[in-house]
Length: 192
Image (cartoon, rainbow, N blue to C red; front, top):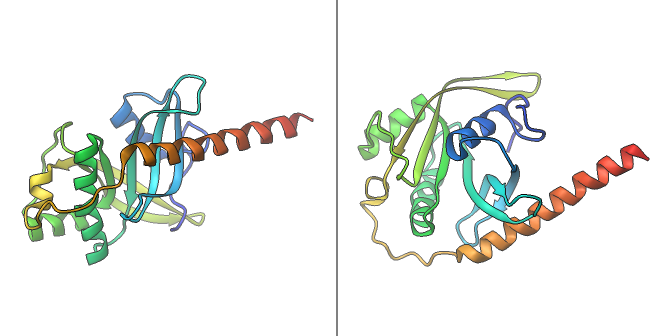
């Protein structure tokens, strides 16, 4: 996966991820981003934005983020399956895609062109353009839309064996501890 987007206000978090964190959590307090996290049989998540408990490397809440530049059958099946997982876990997942890709989803699956509900598990952060600048993909965010499980998963029966949310959160906690300890080590080493 390529690097994308210029740095936001929070260290290690891009402007687009920061925008999603603000949209989902309402602020940037106690937010950490983790890249490439395994979802136990449902592939690897590009990013997880975690709000951790105050002064603890423990998940308080999280949201997943997938960044896609095109639409392939693999991405479609990932989106469908993960929406089932997010609905079962009562959490949300964001897909950062272009307006063009979303228009294709509207045409193929009958998604609503412009609809948003905070209750929907599958959210899209639509970008109207993307350009390469200094070896980074710069995304120009445009709007949010969302779809419910019934819209996303209507053609397939609910027969998936879902990963255990608590086990996944344990993995998030372990990765977050490693990230935070690495950051502390770097700061201490620089001061010495």
